[in-house]
Length: 173
Image (cartoon, rainbow, N blue to C red; front, side, top):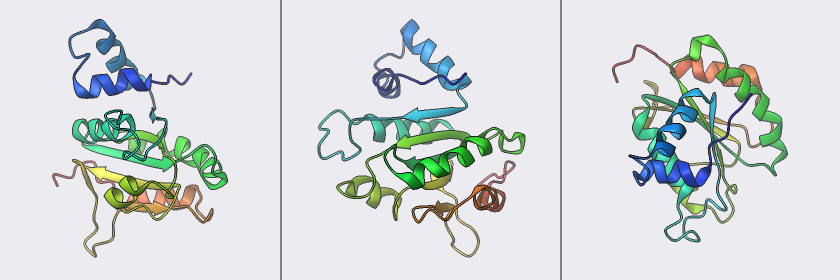
């Protein structure tokens, strides 16, 4: 059974507000046990959020606390995102990728979402990015570990090929 982390509690945990409470410990357990951390918010356009920056703060928390992180930047209303999600979920369960922490960032897309577009170079959604120690993984030929599925043309084989090319569990990068 999937467990979903309360966004407000996760953001408070990420900022340290709940760091000493029993609730914070419970959310750490949920994060540890959840196959995919679900990151959601009212909007991912941080210009509209003021101090309520859950989505971006939670991504920052995951980037800072996991050597390997795969993030599926996606949204519920997008047909390409819905079609791709089962592939992402299946890949997260494969033992060969056990060293990757998996996250699903439900963002508003690209229109009106310049913060995520600029920061991560998102061409559209869904986009899967693989990070190592907080940075997008780069190949020797300067190719970034980004799988762009916003044209609806990506399947499980594409995701596995990207992961196999860029995920090096013994990497000391």
